[in-house]
Length: 448
Ligand SMILES: *Cc1c(COP(=O)(O)O)cnc(C)c1O
Image (tube, rainbow, N blue to C red):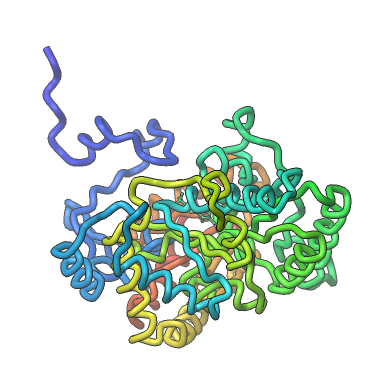
C-alpha cells in the first residue's frame, strides 16, 4: 500500500522538494520554514511566526516583500505581455531597462545581453570575452583568471572560476583549469599593513601572472569591493584601479561580477563606481528585479559589440535562453529602478547604514568578535572559534537555528556572520536587528 502523503507543508516539502545547497539529512535536526506570505522586511510562516529577512532572501530583495509599487507594475505588465521571445522581437520593458542601465554607466557599457540567473550571466561574459578575442584574430586568448575565494555561480563554466573548496572538491574533474590569484581581502593585512597595502600586494601578484601568460589570457573576473559568498571579504578600491590598469596594459578583459554587489548594495549603484573605473563586461542579477523574478544581464562596451557585428552568423554571439529578456522580469527591474529614483535610495541608505552601524557598536566591541566590517548595506564579523572548519560549520547551523527562535533570518557563512538587509528597515527594525543579532551571537557562543 502506498503511504498517505504527509499532512503539513514542511513534511510534504521534505518528501518532494530537493532543496538547494542543502544536505537534506540535516533537516532531521535543522528547521525548514514553510513561508505563507511576506510583507516588507518580514517573512511569515504557516504557524503564524515571523522572521526579519536580514539577508534579503539570499541577497535579492531590495525593497521588501510584497512591495506595493513593484506589485502594481507587475499587475499592469501581466495584462499587457507576459512573455515574447527576444530573437526577432523586442518590447518596451527590455528596451527601457537597457537604456536606463546604460545611462547609469554614462553609456560606457551601452549594450545589454539578457539571461535569467547569475551563473548564466557569468557564462555569457566568459563566452563573449573568448569570442570577442577570436573575432579580433586573437584566438590564442583562452585562459581565465579568478581570485582566491571567488564565487561566480555553480554551473560548470561559472564553477570553474569559483574558488570555494567545498564546490571545487566535489566537481573538480568536470571543470576547466583556470588561474587563481591572491585575494585583496583586507583581513590578510599583516602587522602595520593597511587594506591598500594588501590590495597592492595582490595586484603585484596578478601582474606577474599577466607577464608570464602574456597573450594567452582572455579575461579576469572579480567581485568588486566585496567577495560575498566566501564570507564577505572586503577590499580597498585601489585594487580595482590597479586591475583596470593591468588589464589595459596586458590586453585582458575585465569582467566585474556585480551580481551581489550591484544595485546599491555597496553604497553606489555599481560597486565599480567607488574605484572610478568601468569593466569591459559587467554582470548584474539578484537585486535587479527587486527580488521578484529571475533576471540577469551582461553589459558591455561598443568596441566589444562591434567585434561581433558582421554579415557572418558565426561571428555573432551564439547564446540564448528561452526566457531571455522576459517582460515581467524587466518590468519588475524598471519598477525597482524607479524606486531608487523616487526615494533617493542611495542617499537614504547612507543614513540607514550609519544608524545600523551605531546600533551594532556593542557587538563590534565584543571580545569574541573579529574583523567587524561594513561596506554600504553589508555588515560582517567573524566569530572567534576553534580553527577547524567543523567548528565553523557547527557554529553557522546553530546560529541559524537560534536566530529563527529570535525572529531573525540570518545564515552565517562558516564563522562569518553577516547582515544584508533590504533597504526599507525603519528605526525600530534597525534596533531590533542589532540587539537580537548580538543576543543570538552570545547565546550560540555560550553553548560551546
Ligand atoms: C549569487 C552569485 C552568482 C550566481 O547567481 P545565481 O543566480 O545564484 O546563479 C554569481 N556571482 C556572484 C558574485 C553571486 O553572488
